[in-house]
Image (cartoon, rainbow, N blue to C red; front, side, top):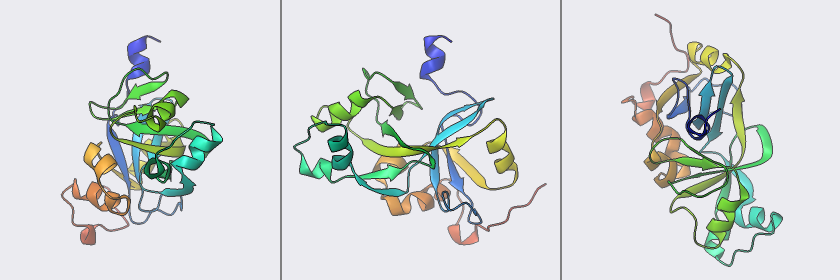
Length: 193
């Protein structure tokens, strides 16, 4: 696999955010917004961007023995990125090069899984905008496509304003709003043409 294919997402859902429909029964995804980081014939991986964990960034940095003197930074809450591998960390961030393990989602968003991005953030030299999440959402071959056909999800283009600037509690509504849909008219059960 060439370097270009490792550094970019593929698949027709690339650069998309998944919005859970109101009837979503899985408690891991009720009213969730999930940024897709990878989509291919093998499946998909995404990071949920609107669920808080019980941990702060300071607690994560302490566990990794990364010093941080910035109390405001240490107090930032970490997100629950999804139910798979909840001990694995992901940093969604504005473009910043030079980290060991990064993938560009689009021109405005990258995801990094290597420790060096946390070290840079803790020292005040990291990306300008970032979210830290533990765990991810994963779908096997054809699983996400099946869920889309069953009207479990809507999709919208990935949006840095929703990701980095919107309050956590309004991200679902903001993502739905990108579709031009009034939330009050969004029904839990969809139809098929």
